[in-house]
Image (cartoon, rainbow over all chains, first blue to last red; front, side, top):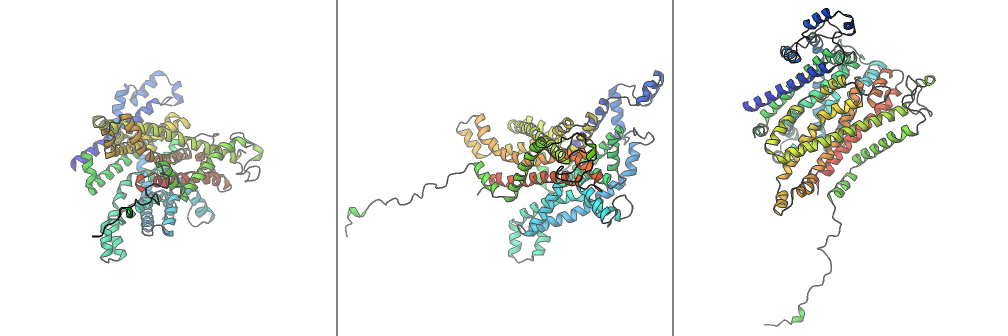
Length: 309
Length: 304
């Protein structure tokens, strides 16, 4: 097991390194001058001082090593657009809102998604199954960038039930969390249904039925336990889903989170911010994937054995 | 003992030909098609897709308007017989723009799927066929690329390459093929050790015959199913990028930037978001439904 964890850990580090390297060299490929259009008017001595200040006078491989070192220490650079703000400050300031939104949407998605999946599997090929799977299909086909504006417009604006935007009281959480969770609900419901159906045809379920156990006991005590295991494997895709979702949902609902920052840094072409946040998001995703692998290895011995080969 | 005369023994008359197979035997594809046809949902998806593709090709050609000419007299019109989907704030005909956008989206989806197919099948096939050290090295690379978050990489690539269709396709192709490669490798590994391949080899079949006759037919179903899931993914990818402002640039229309535009104006002109959304969702829905149906139809284990 330790060998397996170590292997995964090394992959994680390599992946992170690939991403950091890619962002560094993309930054270098960028046309234009890091000091803006004004730099052309500066006397060469001043430009040299500026370059020295930012370490740009050194050869590229030294800059690269320095960048790697900085990232390893959590220093992602200073924003181009707002030179008084470092990327890490921005992350510290706006990540909590995103994290909260993400967790809330996950809770909603897990409750609704698993319930839909379970109901669909128990009522296989009945109307409950069809309607649950219909909801799941809609969740896949109608992306968050469509759902979020529609929810904001109708529930928020036209009917005035809930606030259409901003991030203040608990009532401001409901719509964004709902918009963000739809895709995840769909993934979870489909996965859970397939998993439950597979489990329900196994022999030990037949045994439980034939010894006269109540259906509710079979479902909660026998089926759920095994059916829920494969769900761990889709944590990775779900994390991706939630993060990409926050980019859209936060922009639509004007939530001061990291996704909103990211999208606005793309529109203002704030390159250091874009790369810094990308590295940050990538790190989160890669860590989630790593944990997923470990968790699954713990749960299912077959996986870690196959990893050894 | 009573003797039995020989003439009591006569060969039985053949009355029925019970041995012969009455129904024509179905090939794999005929059988799959038969199964797919009986799946109403999947067929519905297929029909909708064909319809949308035809509209995407034909509608911009026969329309009186093009996607970029602005008619400043006709801004913000509601849907009518002149403009089926209304017009936008530059007086551009939305009917034409939506179908242009569909064209672009479908094109991106298909090109992305084709690239995935070529790279993924080749990579996965080579990796699995050679096995051993080659396979090991190739799989380590795959594992690393697989854990790079596709969308984030795409966003930085596009920010730096400059927005546009080429960047989107490049960004997708760089990372998208990995799933396909894994799938193909897994399936070939599974198939190539099975008895019928061994039997073919024992009977003296050449490697080319084994690959063409035995390995590929066993992989192709899975690959087709995978493609029906890749295409909507790529379409979603384009729309998402266009929505956050790094995708297809105006005046060129894409479903993503139409939806993005529509979201800005939807309080007063809901038609601007409704039509592109419907088309977009229909595409995704149909591909997903069709993919599910194909998976059931092409899986040899489901054969009865």
